[in-house]
Length: 441
DNA sequence: TCTGGGGTCCTAGGACCC
DNA sequence: TCTGGGGTCCTAGGACCC
Image 1 (tube, rainbow, N blue to C red):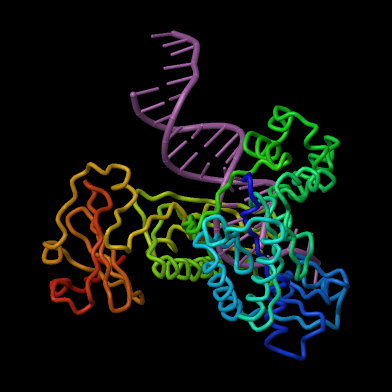
Image 2 (cartoon, rainbow, N blue to C red):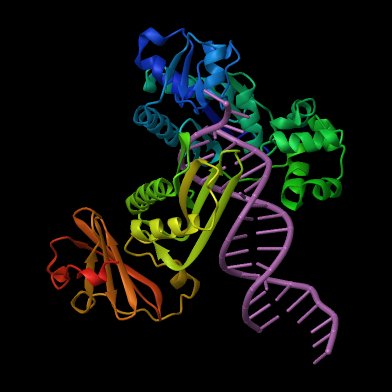
């Protein structure tokens, strides 16, 4: 908690639905519901006109149709949302370099790290109004709710107080007074399960929570959660605004209109999902050691299985093979409504100056010289993939890209090593050969 | 015919090592 | 021959967030 209200939270109102209304005037003033439109879809966002009928985010589309049959039901145009989001995040970065996006429509901004110097109530209020006006102008009329406070927690609570199209500044020292009468559900991390446990303890407001000792909360809710709630109930929040957070996992999942019962179909689904995960890993220059599958049965019980490899992969075929093998451990014969594939334990490997995770763990390790490598290795172009796998001795080299081949050298002895990029027509790559059939498995 | 998709973080238990 | 902790890694599941 800071002595000045220098953390800002901005939240675009009913974001997806507002973009639709902006782009299609006939939808303005009408209930608009964006989300899954199939039999098992849920509402992602709905316009305020739809909320009047009791439609809410995460409600099943079936129920939303029952409550508001005359609404426009839309599947969503994510490129348009992404573009609007980029514009807004760009505006925020003009305010301060420390911008932490939470999703397409939400971000924290550290005002103290930027150009703002007047943290008086009047100064911040004027600043907030101006920022909202800039957002509306730059996005063709999208409105945002803004909260400003002494911490992330307070800024977020504040932005929720006057939605939509609102601005609330919580002055330093007024946090307790504001929070005490509120439901414990305002605290991030208190969802339905925690709220119910707290209710059984006789805790429903923040003031109730403040009356409980830290030990009691830790005993009831676990170390991290209990300690965290004890602090947040007192508005104690030191979490910094963090601009660049690295991805920790990449996953793809899908819920099917009808339960899958044929194992061969499930394997085909996993294979396709593995490809899609691999494509995204490649696009972002990532690879990961842990491959997971997620299986949701007809009765909604959710199972997961994972396997950790000795070194990271971005290979669609490797991910797919492991995913199918893990499915073999499970009994999905009663029907499966959801299947998913994910990769975690990610390591960067595209930037020239980066080393792999194993090398990072043991920085002293001597790594082989790269320039002489190409003449000594053989490359494998995996069928249908813009990916190169090359083998050298007992080691492996990965590469990928369009027009550029990026290679990471690794041997069993040294682990992941340095990375180098070549143009696809670089003569250094000439010695590489296409794989023979027995090398592609 | 209730209940998406993409994530993050935490916990608990077991293996394994010192 | 029996009894330790501590630390790390891995797996499975669950809560939560937008």
